[in-house]
Length: 167
Image 1 (tube, rainbow, N blue to C red):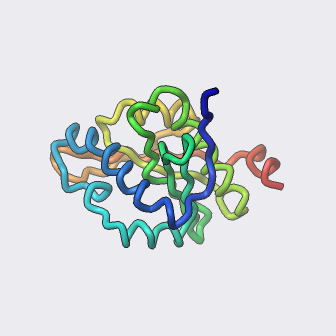
Image 2 (image 1 turned 45 degrees about the vertical axis):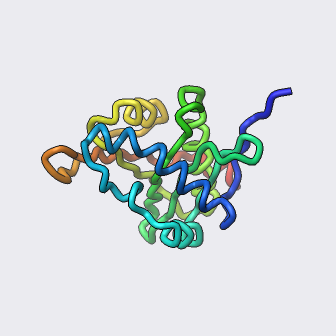
Image 3 (image 1 turned 180 degrees about the vertical axis):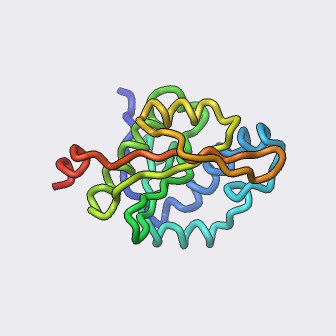
């Protein structure tokens, strides 16, 4: 009998697995932009543990293994910043990224303060851009980080249906 992937809130016990998965998943981004100093590759375990207490962190599990994760936090203006959506390379292209994104959106809407979702990705990260657009995000800006990298900023308004499911 096969196992199914479950999505739940991360705990402090997940920190090491999340960090290892993050390091694995961001190798492709680092290669794409020829920059191995990006924050997901240099983040410390202590910094990640601190993030676990600051916002909402979800993990996708296949049995006991963390195979995906996403983070989000809502600011005082109602903007839910979604970050570090990662899926193990062997689990990609099976809808898990979309499931994680929908789960974090729902969780942040349940908190009641989110008015819009915001995320960003590199301009060459076509797979990420396709996923975000398919999930209803629209580009609202770009920010040049350096000659090799521009960040594409995308947003999506929290819909009335999201509020209804959280009520």
